[in-house]
Length: 294
Image (cartoon, rainbow, N blue to C red; front, side, top):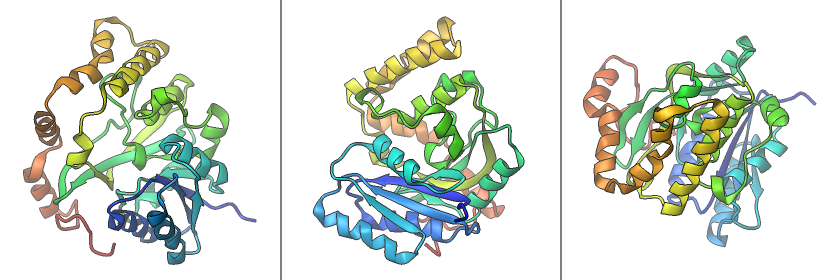
């Protein structure tokens, strides 16, 4: 049996509104790269959602839904998908984001041509309740210093070589990494000497709405501080600057949500920048949550 080129993996739990999950799935169906499979792990959703998730298999024979008996968290669900994946490459995807049509093709081509890199992400448009509201541009070739502020990769936009997980382990499943499993994974891969790259193209729509900025519980912030302490030390990030960034999660937790949302929106460029880029043809879709064709 021929191995598929790309396995797209996502883990979902009570996906409400379901229309966002349908939009995410249809964005994979619209990909210019046709040699893919989509693995959706149902992480113990309630009965009212199980059948709706399973029904997505009817859209295409390349879609496979895996059912979990209980809610174990996203890291566990992604690991189940990786174990079942047949693809040479593993592409992440969340159930409320959108992959633009050439995403899989361009990332797979990059990994084909650049054997020195183990995974590749991209830049993204930011979407929310009112559609596209900003952009996120990531460092082209992240270095260890790139981890000081936050992860230098947009997790659901990344495509990995499957061999990376086979060599260096899967997502770490624990209470300590429950809200930062991606940050832990990317730091670990860099510690092992793996190289990552971010295509300087916007091939993805990443959802950041009001719900994304709800305050995480203090215990999760403390867990991230511990992760930063261990990860920074392993990466050789020491000194006063590293010490200050180690406690960034606590500082963010103390900022009122409405102020934090405003800061993030200013950082992302805002509607003026988007209007300019749409006029130049860089972003082809109107500023709406549900894009044409999806």
